[in-house]
Length: 176
Length: 344
Image (tube, rainbow over all chains, first blue to last red):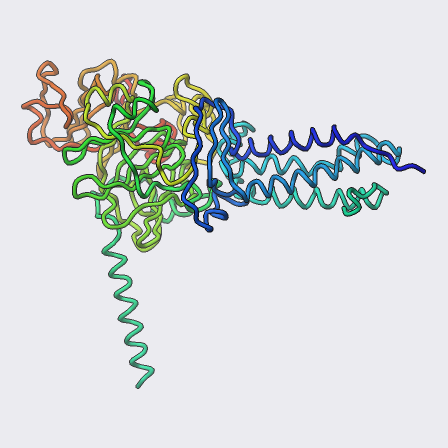
């Protein structure tokens, strides 16, 4: 039986969209009044892992492009890349299983549930902003738990990918 | 014998460390009213999200002149103005919202200019030889600072150390004026202005909490996100008041009420207070006396130092700062509120 071939363009598009959303959620990507400017801090190795919060790191450079502001933090980009890769694998598996009629649409959606904690984790760096978005007064008492959102997200994405593989989802690039 | 020598040396080293730490903590300020014990405050502290120094204080501030700052600041932008030892400096809210503390020096004094976006409080403190950092903890939704000499926790609004080796010690405050860039520049044309060369990279064109012009986001929302010790509904939660306190009383003046007055008088026991509206800066100045204060508002004039009048000579100026009503009340539930309503 021929292996299903999920829409790579769709997966790629969604993965890129997710990466941008994640960077926006953690504040490294912003749409705001800005000029045209490039700033970089003096090079020091320790700046690469200087933390702003749990799983959230300082930028080493900033790029302003009209109305777009990009804070460049290698560690944040690595985390965003890892999450995006896992998401893409999950989407690939979900679409393949769905095409194979082995898995319903709801199961496919559930298998990618790990992305939501990651997006929420973006707010852990600036918890008040997240609480404002959620609009739940008093939730601040639990803000310390936000530090667990990103590892939770990674774990969920890995588990759901393992589950997909057990259900017969094809490997990607013969590796994962 | 060797063992006893070692113990002696260890004790000496420990006492030297403790002495050095005690010497380095910020200078002692006046005793102020507290509505709870230090222990109660310490146990009410909770995490605000970012960890210790996750919000980085500015330790090597850079300044520009007013003309250069006009390229970055709009006339209506909020700045926190300090005039100390003959020198004026403006700290843009757009920068401090990302850093909360600037460890600065004016004249011979080391100062920490602090700002808490969640309570809209900007307070200056003499820091001595040490510096302050953002602990990542909140008390009544208000920033809790730490000093880098003893690692004690200091509440910004209470102005007191609530735990650590400095517990119980109060900070000496320096007046910080919450005003706009246009107003501050008009009063202090020679002012210096904090620049964006902060040592960290942030998007200083955006306030992560909302905006003051127009009033949006957290600043407009009536919700209080973090638990507070006391709540009151006489004013809207985020209404701005001008607050001051002595060892015996805390007083909040509704900013909207103050704008309608030239001067306000209030007596509490044998303490007489005079609150003078400064129209140019849109703020108030507070004086205390043991006797009733008579002042003709027409005799007032305002200079870089603040209000000037013959009747003010000999009066004790008190520090005052703006705050959201909910935050002031959370710290001072016994506060007097001057909002135009009849006083009991």
